[in-house]
Image 1 (cartoon, one colour):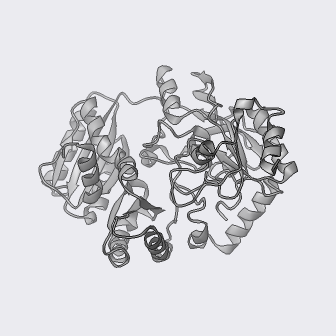
Image 2 (image 1 turned 90 degrees about the vertical axis):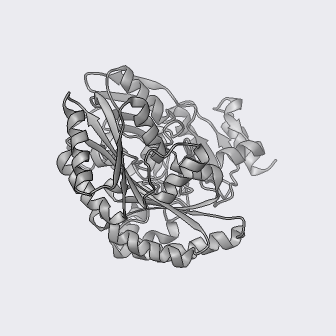
Length: 465
């Protein structure tokens, strides 16, 4: 009997037999996230039903010095949920209870395996609203969203998911159960440990339960698609929208190539009569009877003053959804049709046009024969750079070329005082490049924090550092 068989038998001492998976298909399925850069090689998959079972798993892995990879919906894009070296995958997918929705506190308490879309639906059913949103809402689990500090399309108004966390329950790397902050909105008693775990990518512990804030829903939402003659028009339009739209909730950017991929592969209609190099999708909340009229008038003035070169304003919820799909479906469309090298970076918003100009100069040199698709949450400085592999280039040449080009792109990001990972995390994909965004002193402090919470180094090893 090999070591993984012995470990599986030890797990079955406190887990149901169907909660311990050893077959090759399960190892492949649970062993990686959306990124295909790394080959999965876990030794075991376990599916606990509650925090107590997670705690027992972590304690056993500490005793046996076996590494753990926490796993949620596996929609990550940095290899953070990929097991490459005989680790135990701890999947939270069976921990999907909504424990409580409190309309007075305006909170929702749920287990880590609940998907984002279900939280949004539960909030709506109670007359409330959870505004954090992104395209993988139907499969991304809330524990993983916290572990990567997910952002999405409404960061410009509502912030990252970090801003909506009230309390968490977490099993640390040494198997200790921490219940941090409960449902308190004010608690000024020392260090706020919640925010060490939010964005920690499972390297400090496993989040098993979370309490989230909720807010009032908008009465309605209107979306506007604008065509621009160049990326130079992004900042003037953003400034104009901030000054003239009271309830701006999203300001999304896409180059023509990004839009064209969705139109082509999804069979959707281009809502504008002409093609443009750059597009901005604006979302506004409509909270009073005159808001729609003000919005239409504002974009009419933007067109007359040539801030934008064409525009369509949604006139129904169905049309609003159609416009959002043009932006929302980009990542899924690319993943369905190409092998992709993805980069997720951020720079100060005011520097985006200048950064894009230099970025394309690097892209044209590094990828002269490849298509590169750029889009992002430009309202908060976040850009997604997608390099599409063609059949004419081998896998080896593609990945090695992308790796070489990343150094040039991240050097540019560093010069603009940006981040090599705006919302996807570091994981395996970007750990080699961490120094472009963090100083040696910062990295040393982060490694010291990991040693405190995970003294045996069993929790998601090789990620971030």
